[in-house]
Length: 458
Ligand SMILES: Nc1nc2c(ncn2[C@@H]2O[C@H](COP(=O)(O)OP(=O)(O)OP(=O)(O)O)[C@@H](O)[C@H]2O)c(=O)[nH]1
Ligand SMILES: [K+]
Ligand SMILES: [Mg+2]
Image 1 (tube, rainbow, N blue to C red):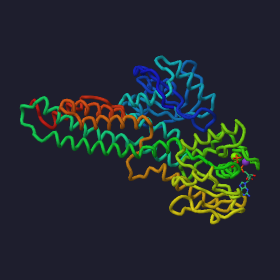
Image 2 (tube, rainbow, N blue to C red):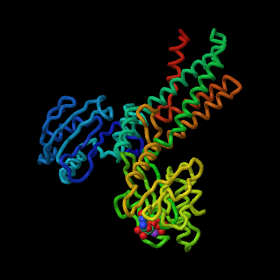
Image 3 (cartoon, rainbow, N blue to C red):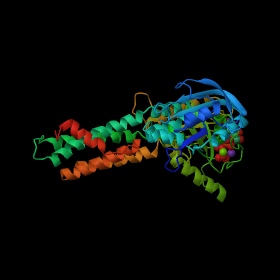
Image 4 (cartoon, rainbow, N blue to C red):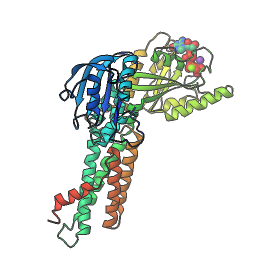
């Protein structure tokens, strides 16, 4: 949605349908660039655009033939108070394919107007400095949000929570660097002798703070992409039955034949606003044909990659904790469930691992324990994905993680550097890595800080 192509030509006026294509009550066509006002006038027959940000009713006509195309509302947002920072016009017409096509064709026929590339409006907003990169990403995530928690996270990032945090770090870094540069360049002047130890202490504190956010980073990406839960267990434990019950549809084949599931079957769930990718897997055992063995290999790979492992034990088996399953159930991070409690009670099993844990009891046959399992699963998913309002803004993309990891690496090199010049060089690299998060990498602000804090040059 927000993908951008070649560097845009700001002299061009671009236009596009901004609402979803198809039948709808209203469709919004947006025009941005120097000819936006003229385009609005050409289609509405007005001598000049309406007052800023005021909706006026208009009949939309083909400027060439005079044919009436539609009627609706027209709005004008003069630069710089618009989404793109340029003159923007909006035509709100009726949302049929024919009216939208007619409006777009009429705009295309006007001199100096070109259809917008995907993401071109947002690209212009970024170029005009109205959005930083994290806000652009937040906007893209908001448009794609499917659950309430995703919507909250996207809105928070779009509002600049992550940008403010990284820019705050960058300000501190640039300030430290400015002081250091000053001691290097003007060492004959009277600057504090003890600057370097203090500065290195600041750098250590900053590095620790960024590292702490990095350590918490899987949360944000999980909320964006979904918490991956793998359902694992022996053949015939009822894994596919459980996945179907959670998905409330027959997503996977259930049968009394052990080894029914071979491929990994994914279903998407919304658990209390948190997106979940639930994977049904092949029953784990060594027997079976080559296809089943490939299924077992895939199941184990999925178990490795999952954020949470739900281990389903078979209450109908001779030994539900046989050696093929016991190690999975002993994992303290796994959610362990004994199914078929209509055949055997959890109290009939020995405790799992240390600490005397018991599996949750479940019968998909009778429905007993299902609500409790759903609640336990939701709690675990929330804990893995939650971005509490008071906590630091989550890193939602691998890009953020890489930039911050580079920053920490440079800061740690700076702390170990033998000469002030080398410390400065590593701090400069750290500042540049931080600047990548918001997309603002410039050096002018370094000079600003030098002049503001030291009044050098008088
Ligand atoms: N008695 C009883 N039977 C159940 C229960 N849950 C599932 N079953 C039955 O157990 C059998 C196996 O269920 P599946 O869901 O196919 O089991 P699975 O773990 O996916 O099996 P594989 O894909 O072969 O590994 C089916 O006949 C189900 O009807 C339960 O709670 N009680
Ligand atoms: K089965
Ligand atoms: Mg199955």
